[in-house]
Length: 623
Image: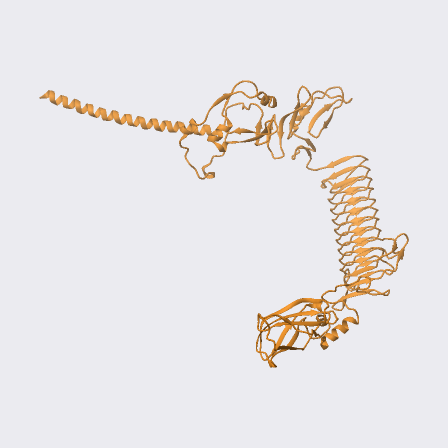
């Protein structure tokens, strides 16, 4: 369908705004602009429907389309007037000239005709002011920028002056220029100072960072954060100091305080992780946290706690009032422990490792417990020391003291008891010769040696508490390789209280169930006997697990042991046979009782008939 030949279109631009005008105008303006036009047909204003397409171009003729094509279909034109809001997006208007192209079809659905020429878009006063302001300082837009070059487009200063960012007219961030060159290093980075305005970096220091925090100096103990040496770092907190204000900005370089309050790092490469009142005074020393801890010597460490001191590469892991001042000494924690000698170790309470290579542990109630010579291993435990027992009956108990009577003491000389990690005790003469057979303490795992010297498990207890006799338990709480017996008959009891049971049902059809169970005699295979020394030749009585599972599936399970082909050996619980056998006896008795009752009734009936017959015979004889 064609447009009526005498339809004419005239247009007029009423208002055009560039999107960036909102950044500078006092009145909030958007990206839309109002477009007004007039349609005439045959010299008279058009009164009809019309479809419109609007597109934006960078030239009056040809050129490139800018942004999307906007459509308005089925618009009702009254008296030839058209008013429409157009929005080509913020990127469409970058200060360059733009032309609007209009296509129209009237009535709606007719052939579309593109009107010519394109309409130039002129700027409104707001838009003109925005473009002027945008071009003058080359400012950054609040909604981001595109097409920037970091070598020429940046925020900051071009002279040797700091740059500050403020919030509520208070300094929140200060970037200081570098200007410092170090030997073998080259130019040093500038400083980054955040947090309270009072936070500072000493003049001449570069590469320093204060990430935030800081207090008002007018408040005692709540001061600002300060860096006095090169490359110092303070993560936050308040009253923290990195470096020494001694005029040499490299004397305590690369120190770090992660946070906390009133912490001091006064040596190069030292660190305080946090806490309060901590001091890292040695090169590479570390105080991880806590309060009032001091790491004085090079490479010394205090992990935490309070009032602990480490020196000469010593380490205090925690606790309180502990000192590890010996070279590479160690206090893992506790209270009032001192390791003052080289490679010494003190722990507990009141322990004093005063000699090189000593280990001292004290429980504390007896007072100070100190070493008396080098290379000692000392334990002061008021409740006794137990090895293999948690209830020692004296100063030292190894396992069960009743087993100690098995040790032999001959006239050859003193004996020495030694333990291996399996807790096997052996007795040796003074010349180092083994005195007799190996001796054993009562312990979790008991082993013996066979004729070839191989270890054989006698008692084995797993980490899960399963116990094996002459075998390693796999699937059950107690497993025995071979026979088991008791010295006298007695109970093997299990909990069977009515109050712990539910869904109780009487066992029925016991005879029929037992008829389905095949009882067999058999011999074990040679391969099985070879891996189970407790199993011998001869015939055994039992059931076949696979067949038993057809009758009692809940009483057949895997043993955890495997055949050479990898399949699991099954094991059975034959206890159901006991219960069902008893139930079968009950069923038989009930059946027999019923039969006896029937026979008794039949006998009574027969006796009654006989008595009546005898009476009748007597009457007949009397006649």
